[in-house]
Image (tube, rainbow, N blue to C red):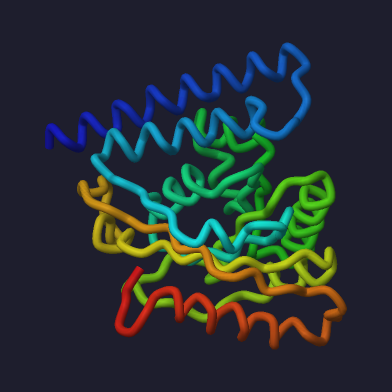
Length: 240
C-alpha cells in the first residue's frame, strides 16, 4: 500500500509540474523546435516516473535510426510502462497518437494537448482519419509519430494483430515505418494492475521499413512486414 500511495503521489505531482511548465512555455509564446519544452518536458516526465517506479529502461538498435529522419514508430502496447519507456528512450521529437479519452483526464489530458500529442477516436472513422492527417502534418514538420499499432493493450502479453491506420499514414507521407518492441513491460504491470513493479524493460528498435514508392494498395503488405519485424524483435516465445 505504501508503494502505491508513493507512486500515485509522484505521478500527480510530476504531472502537475509538467503541465505548469508547458503552460509557461505557451504563455511565453514558445514555438516548437527540436529538444524545446514540448519535447524535453514530456521526456523528463517519463524518465522521472520510471525512476520513481524503480524501472530501468534500456534501448537497443539506435544504429538503425541513422539517416532515417522522421518516421512512424510502430510500437506494441500493454500498459503505462511501455508508454513511459518509449517516451523516455526514443530519440528526437516524437508525438504519440493517443486515445481521445485521455484528454479528459485532469492535468494529464491538458499536458497531452499542450505538448502536441495527437488524439484519436477509433470508434469514429472520420475522426480517426483526421487524427492520422494531423500525424502526417507532424511528420512534415519534422516530428516522428508514435503509434501503438495493435489498437489496444495486449491482454496476455503476446503480439496482437495490427490496425491499418499507421501504415496508411506512412505510405501517404512516404515516411518509413520503424518497428519498436518493448520487452518486459507486461511482467511489470499486467492488464488490470495499478502500480508497476520494479524491474527492467528494453526498448528494441528494428530496421526501418521504407515506404518510398508504395501506394494505398500496399498497406496490408507493409502491415505484414512490420508485424514480422516486431515478432523477430520479440524473439521465440517472448512476451512484451
